[in-house]
Amino acid sequence: MEMRKSSIAKANGASKSKSNIPNPQIKRGQRILTEKPFAFVLKSKYRLERCDNCLEATKVLKCSNCRYVSYCNRACQSQAWAQHKHECPFLKKVHPRIVPDAARMLCRLILRLEHGGDLIRGYYTEHGSRKFRDLMSHYAEIKNDPMRLEHLDSLHAVLTDMMAESPSTVPNKTELMSIYGRLITNGFNVLDAEMNSIATAIYLGVSITDHSCQPNAVATFEGNELHIHAIEDMECLDWSKIFISYIDLLNTPEERRLDLKEHYYFLCCCSKCIDPQETKEMMAALCPNRNCGIGINPERTNCKRCDTGISPKLRNAYNSVMAFTRTNLEAMKDVAYLDVCKVCLNKQTGVLHPLNVWHVKTLDAAFEAAIDVGKWTDALDYGQRLLPGYRKYHGAWNPLLGLLHMKLGKIQLHEQRAKEALPHLEDALRILTVTHGRDHRLLAEQLYPLLIQARHEAN
Image 1 (cartoon, rainbow, N blue to C red):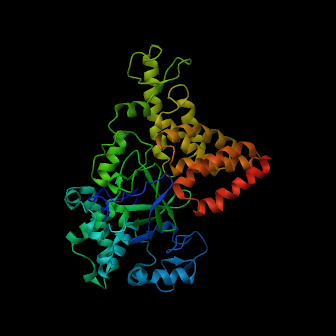
Image 2 (cartoon, one colour):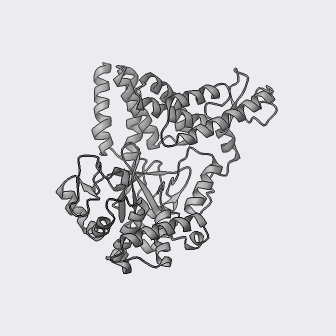
Image 3 (cartoon, one colour):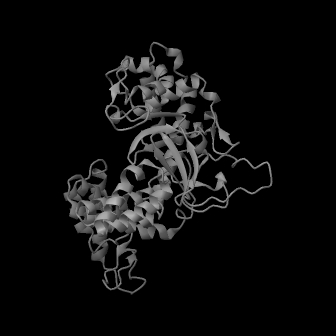
């Protein structure tokens, strides 16, 4: 089950200070919350290559009893045992079958609650905290959502099979639906250093954080530990005014709002979503006057800047290219093929504006595909062209923009172009220091060594 981010529930704001002393100002880059998960599950596709406890990608050994989960060492196995001992016999029963990630997460939540989890609090301030039951379940919405109900029925069948020898452990349908609702609207995708989703987790304290398509904070991870960093200056630590993004921002307002409505049961009314100009820019064609070059609405008759006419031929070409691009990117959502990306980009040339979101998505796919097959010249070309779109749609302080700079710098170092690599790596440092913190392993193990190498080779 894919979930981009947490709760749509909004608590009553952070608890107020007992004195009249104002809260300290929050600076960009300041870590404002660190939290361990209430419950988490490593995605099953990684269970033979990552530790089920620390999530590290390394050599792992299976649990000798269930043979389902794996650990990197005895310390991790011992640390995980407090929770794993309850699920171990259930996983052993179904082995060698693979348990759906959502079913295993539900199982863990059921067992966590059965063994005292109801009393656990996650703190977001010194005095402000939340328990699992404080999270919104969206019971009414799920009850009227046929797709969710079908999914829940399938998970109930898996749990009933897993727990056949302990049938009383499986909650009734009403209780299971309330747990399921809290999971699907409060679940985080736990990301590795490259922003790949490797696990699903519930964090209690941070579930107070609301969504915005223009966030002022960002969630990053180190193992299963979550960190929230401010990416803008704030007057004080007021959780009613702190926002992160739950979803992929590289989508139009209509698509973002639909995503949020379907997954989190609310309609986003942030300034970006209600601005009609946002969609026009994201879907823009390129003015046919090459000396103008602005984004245009292909349904208009003339460019609003230079008054060049928009012909039916251009309009038809735009509609054809957009349909072709959408179809092919949808077909490549799991694996991107460089040759297909190149065909899309060739068709887009002269038709789509460089900041058209579908052109940006195509460049994104082409960049990763070129890296996968070791086409470094192509990767550098696509990555450089991708930067303005990332900056515009993800924002100047997004980890994805920092990682793009780091990848470009790394490729240029590989191609012995250290002087060109250095500005990218310095931009990566500037961004990732804010989003991850100077002490994060991504910087210590990857970025700092690349910077040292680039500075040495550039001199």
